[in-house]
Image 1 (spheres, rainbow, N blue to C red):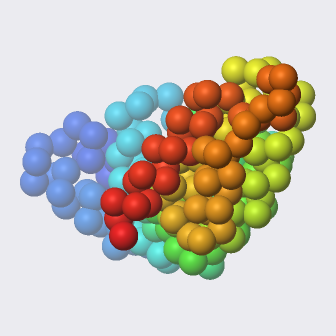
Image 2: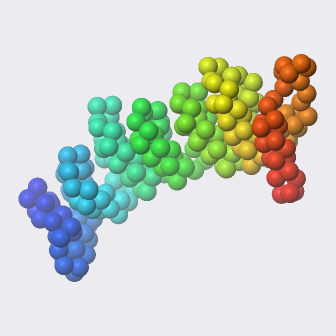
Length: 237
């Protein structure tokens, strides 16, 4: 039943058959479990039809957690970016806290479509481990992903990120002024979502800071972001 020819026939019915044949073929593939899983994952790597690719993803997704080990095996540095994005998508639907660590190299991948899918999957399945993982990769990601992670850590109310945010507010590194201000604003917003005592202290220091001859102060945009975050915290209390 799980020979290559039969799997291809079942997939053909999933993609082109009448509705009753579609449903039956889909159920058979899911029920085959491990016997169909690895052939499907291999086929997914080379299939050109987007419709067939989506069908395979849906079949594997419906296999649930039993598909996790085989999916994790396929995450290798030599795999094409589009295949890795598919693996990240699958783990976002079938994964759990114990499998989230395998997404670490994908969030560091040079292809944005891969690391964005990995970030989404970490958010969906990482549970209590996602905050620590995201904070650990923050220094290694590009500026676009850095802003996305800062925002996510804020939405998660991950208080452990506050000391790192405090350091990032001061460390301009090689960023342009606009990039640095954008990051500072994003951090203020994240601190507002976290709302801890330490977050309030940092935001208050920003809002009340004054420059001496224009030196040593935060920009008006960042001050406004800090004031807005403090107002948001106050409203929630």
